[in-house]
Image (cartoon, rainbow, N blue to C red; front, side, top):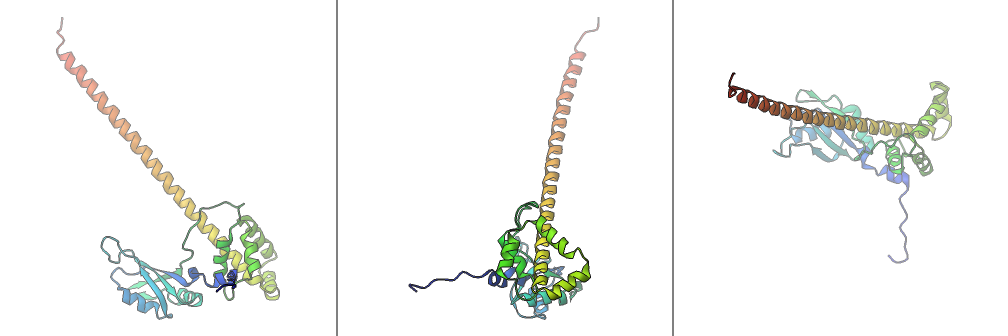
Length: 240
């Protein structure tokens, strides 16, 4: 409508609408379990919005043993983590966790800010109401090193003092939980990057070894041919 303006969504609203915290990863699913059986098990916790069962693209059949399930809200998803983990399905115990972000960043080091996108996602994982916008913006501008220092400073006087502060300083518990989620995300990114680098290094080493073996095989073939020629020539040389 002419003359109207659209107000931008607040960061707290964006965190509340973050679908990442409503999606759970369900693992250790028996290969012979049907989608209906899995759906029935998941709906013991509450209504689900979607269920994506990992399948073999070649056959279209369930071959990977895991699925992603979206619940109506993050509280129900957390309830699934608590109450569906260990549920027996055709002789196997299901493993259930919050699926986390639908993206993975490259590890950026300790000096660069964690960024607004990660801070919003961390806010969506906080129990209860998301932290205020100014808190999320402040944490988004902090680096992993600064977040670690912040957590260490607040926890430096021991768990009893920390508990007392959380009880008397409004919103401190939520801030600390948001910081913890951010640091967990940073650690996950660093671990994923380290694994990727190890795989690259292993692949490069294997390729170098293959090249070296190929060169040695070529030298052996050439040397063998040269010796054969010498032997043939020697047979035709008369003995004086």
